[in-house]
Length: 290
Length: 342
Image (cartoon, rainbow over all chains, first blue to last red):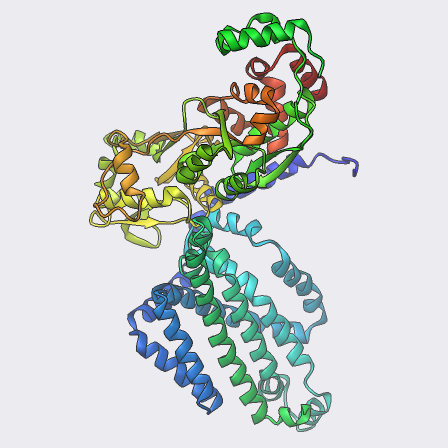
């Protein structure tokens, strides 16, 4: 056994008391600061719930068609979503989809600038990498319970937890995509007298877009992977059905809701991937790689 | 095992006179485990059962010389494993009302045995508000009074309604609480039934409310550290009616939900039947180990405040509450346990 060099209990107690102090004194402030997130999530959820089911299926199938220009993917998408409806999970699936969309949108807004900063500064990257490792590996309940205490239970902590878990791949892939743009292309653009901003928005980002889109795809998938955990702090949706199924030993309920999550994952995964491929084709990367 | 004349006499006295008339001399005997099999004790996910598991583990191992293992468990998985495979051997705090049908069937078939009460006067379940909310609004006495005032307990996500914190999903209390929500017409009265999603999140929500002295209406149960630590007021409900409660919690029952208090559910020490067959002395021991709600709450508050885990809480209990646990065993056994603690 490792010798007990220091007594960690006072330290742990002061951490707990620090959290209590924050909750007591700053709880309102934090709650107000997270308000925009709640408004975004509620708006998306309200919209998804108010839209008739056939319109949502139709729209997603249309998006799938735009991404592939073939009939296979739209058919799969429509059939899969219809199955969710058949399993009596439509309302829950919409809550989950809203949580996933809100998390993905927020993650995109936050992650891409961070990824850009990382690709341009070695110091930023050195500081961010361990933080990203932490976000991806720290067991979620460790920060979930403090977030519940600070923000109150419900959608806000669920959304924050989902963002924490889902954002890192997008940050990493944005950074990677921007750094792996061909140096020759960069040099050529420099020779044309572009300034750094023009290079970033005119050359780097467009060329890195397939990689960034792969990041968005990963973020979507990880957000969906998080829904069960998010339900454990009051988010509702499909994850909640899974929890109920487990708790009551109703294997069927858990299985149905689990399949619902799989369906959403497949739909969004295939659509974002198809867009990525389309984009690669447009900038000629597919031939280069082939 | 070596039988002395005394112990044979004591055994005779036991059979003739029943447990109440055990002569004092019989208490002065060596107690032994009686079985070579490993006694695996289920450590449930909630604090009181976890602490009890460790208390019994120490006493069985040090006092009785049993081979003890602690295994993680929860009401449904542990009881079904006990019923089908005879392991874990002991569940030190089993709420049988959650698993009533399966448990009674197992008792009937002789797969499991009920060794005694884990919590002497049964458990507490109900709707609670903080004492400071009660002090500020003394008119809030019964659940009806609170249901009439959703404005006092606003839902942060939908301020026009009140919020009641229900039970984590999948727990039996989730169904009964939802039924009461319906019985009290709380939807009509402007309330949202909020599921906290997990026990941890429910505790965090309660802790948050108490830290900020905010009003909160929540379902909770005892004995728990939460009820021991925070001053709460339990709302009055119409007397518990087992028939109404059974209907409320049965999805097959068509009658509309009606008001009833939560019946106090028995928390017992459950065991696989081989324990009773092979280790009669353990059966006698577990017949005496019932604690009161207040005793368990006190123990849990210690664990909570000192950041002690279940094992440390159990050791603290054994070190400070000798007057309680020495009653469970013979002085010799108690001495062995005491020696192991120091």
